[in-house]
Length: 492
Image 1 (cartoon, rainbow, N blue to C red):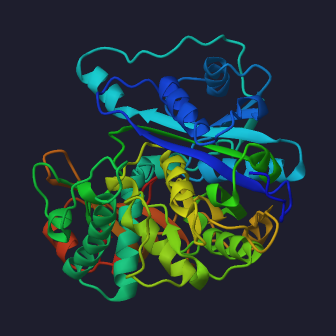
Image 2: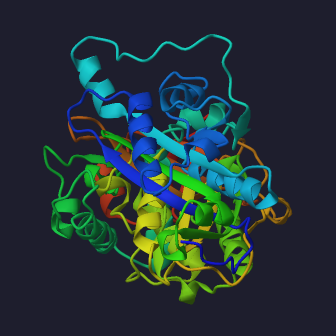
């Protein structure tokens, strides 16, 4: 369109985006990412393929070591680099921030970021007694760049206690939130079910959502054959829906390259700023289970760099693997319960393709913001409130150049708890009851603080009636601990 440059020609912009859902249970991840990338490239009137310098992929549970090369080959791109992330809901935005930084610095002109997961197909294949098929890949292949590499998030103690199952950890955190707010079990379940029902309502208006029929708060809360309890207070509807075949792709390039391709500013979405950090990775070291200094500081830094306050953000997408994650983010941002937490419907209703939900969310945000003056803050959470990444987007040229700064040093200076499992008495800090597949309570997992403030995981002794655990508020109750890798706790 030949309009003059009015901002930094290296400013990173999203010029193509596509979301994909395969409902035939015969999906293959590389094929999905190729399809999504091809569709995202078609958003641009001039073919940008010759400008793409890198194909960058969000890691999934498929076996590919360098999926970017397989995708590039099928797109006819020869002279490109590849990148792959580690596992974590933060990985997409870490990859976006790295790519935007590379573009802003001049080391990269344009890139494709994509991801796809085929869990529904895998489960169907497994139930039919067959292995899912994947493309052959040369043994020597490895990506040129690894972004947000995998790190250990649990240790032997966490595994022995069952904390390695994310649903168990986040369900325990709900008891802390409930206690802090002074809610009864019923009132707490009602509130988080209403929160999730709002996500369902938003998903009902999202043509790409996996579950498009809105459900009520009562349906979210009520346990049934199709909505069994997983870990109190969570029913199946209150957990991430990974039984999906979904993918997405975005195309990011320098502003000048977008102009050369014939795009006007109203056809772009601007990357404004980014940040990220890890909380103390050993969960037992954290001061509070329902707080995230890393997310708070990262969100504050990203907003500061972008030149916005949280009140000036028009759209939020907070990582919604479980309600505890959303409530934590709302608290750290100083938001109320009534603020919409998602633009897609969230990981239960829009769909939670394992590691790739945020790829769907940023593709959705890019389309949502285009031709508007709106802003958005997107948040990805990996692990157990462990790894956090934030992206700020704008539909118009932002007031400042793109910048990304991690705040890890600030987080690392914060206090932590000492590690020990030798306590013999303590008070319950958090707990959950884990249910079996027959929808029956199986056992209770506790977090116990001793008189020094040291945290231990514990299993409640089997003599304690589960109806008492499910009906009373046991946070703050005293317990005696029988020492072990995971102590057995007895209510005093």
